[in-house]
Length: 427
Ligand code: SDX
Image 1 (cartoon, rainbow, N blue to C red):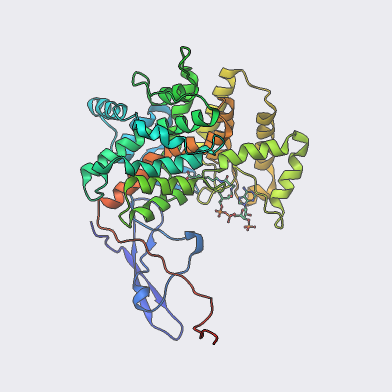
Image 2: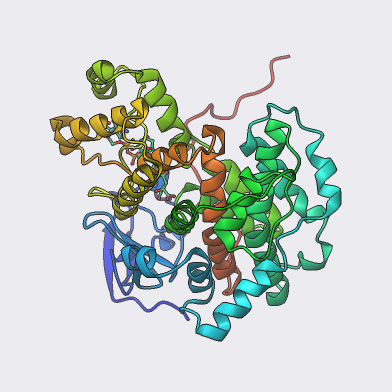
């Protein structure tokens, strides 16, 4: 439905024209100024890092960074974490409403029917070195899925988009667990459809063909909550990568592979792995002050991994839930004196009291606590961002689908050119 301006901004350009810019209001959050008329007046906007740019209209997720609010289709993340499940939240993100009992059963049954991957993909893995990073494998294998599913690549076809969504949501845990098993030289475990989504993932990760594997209820509940808390987060870097890739008409598997690649960076989804590496580098509580000082030093590129956020200038509401889950898991596993976890707790206390972090509103984010839980659960550090990617797949697909469900143009940002003016080739 076309947007209707609620008011307008008038931009008067010195020695130039005055341009009327429509202003649109959403249901929540900041109003937006439509700057497209500037192009006709020979100007572009300039906003490196898109700090003040709304790249699209969306109805999936809303974040109020000042108040620490995160809504998925209007439902607060705290309530979904307490009462919902990852697959129910997937239905909500994709369809806009919570499922009724029958819809939930059908959705879960359909996901279960797509958990296996083509047997030929197993040989694909053997092309990687055993010590390949699981994110490198996941990038490659997910992109390669388009070589197997020629029946669902017509992105303008809603049914193709739906089957691709089910295949991706269902197969990501299987591919993630295969990436791990490959790296430790253990046989791949086939998915088990008598287990729920999180139980099945832990089974494929830690089970083996030689013995019965019992999935701990506390750990599978924590795993499901971790997937749920990572499900979507509006127009973050990786979701924006998926939208931009999708705007060229690329197939869904290529788009999700682009999202996985963008997520890998330590400033984004790679932060949970970077948190553990940082804690290992700190090594002892006596060295925390040294690292906090480095994080504050303008001349030192070191950042405190797991702290700060582009949007949240208050506590990340997911971090609060994640912190409670961390305490539950540590208690269940009887891990109270793990040295790295003790450093993490001490670091959190110091950072929350330190004037630099308070002034810059740098709070622990979702990645700070997820790294702690995953380590306590025995998940190898190299798998942390893979697990983030498994949870976020539904958010990427929901945004990709939302874009395809309405008219859109290929994304094509412009630039401020500061290079050479035209010059002739020297003869
Ligand atoms: C995720 O966008 C999303 O929604 C992402 C995410 C999602 O669900 O998709 O929430 C997931 O990516 C969470 C963020 C994980 N990343 C980290 O934990 C890495 C450490 N954090 C920083 O790299 C940083 O805070 C960012 C990248 C997260 C945010 O960077 P911004 O918004 O670009 O902020 P900035 O770099 O402009 O920092 C503002 C100021 C700067 O100081 P000044 O130049 O103003 O003097 O705060 C400082 C920064 O130097 N600062 C930090 C810091 N983060 C910011 N100083 C020390 N340690 C940090 N962690």
